[in-house]
Amino acid sequence: MAATGSTSPLGVAAEAALAVPGVAGLQPRLARCLAAVVSPTRPETTAERTPPEAGVRADRMPDGSGWHIEVRCVLAEGHRALDIARNVHDQVRAAVISHLAAHGAPEPVTVTVTVTRIAAQQQRS
Image 1: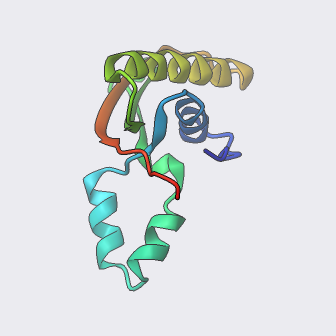
Image 2: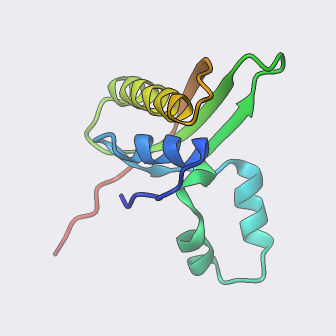
Image 3: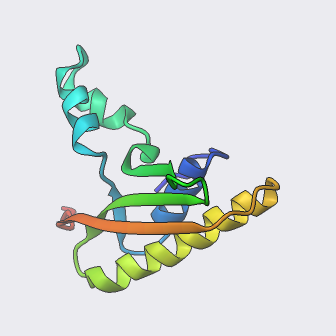
C-alpha cells in the first residue's frame, strides 16, 4: 500500500496500519461509504479517491486525557485475523504515541482494531 504522507494522527495511524503484512486496505465507516454513493461522481473514481485515513477515526477522550484511535481493516486472505489485528493495534499505538511525543504532546493512546472483511487474493493469468 502507498504511504499517505500525512503528519496528522489519522495519517500516522493509517500508514502504520497499512504497513502491517496481511492488511489489504482500510475500510471507511458506513457514513463515509453512504456519502460516497450519493456523490455525483462515478463509483469507480469515488473508491479510488477515498484516502486511507477514511478507515481510521481519532477522537479525544471525553475527559481530555488522551486519544482513542479506531482502525477498520480489510485483511488479505491466508492470514490469521487475530494475529494481524494484534499487530495493527501495536503498530498503530506505537506510531501515534511516537508522533505525539515528537510534536511535544505526549498523551495516552488507546486503539481499537476492527476487521471488516477478508479480501480474496486475485489470481493473475
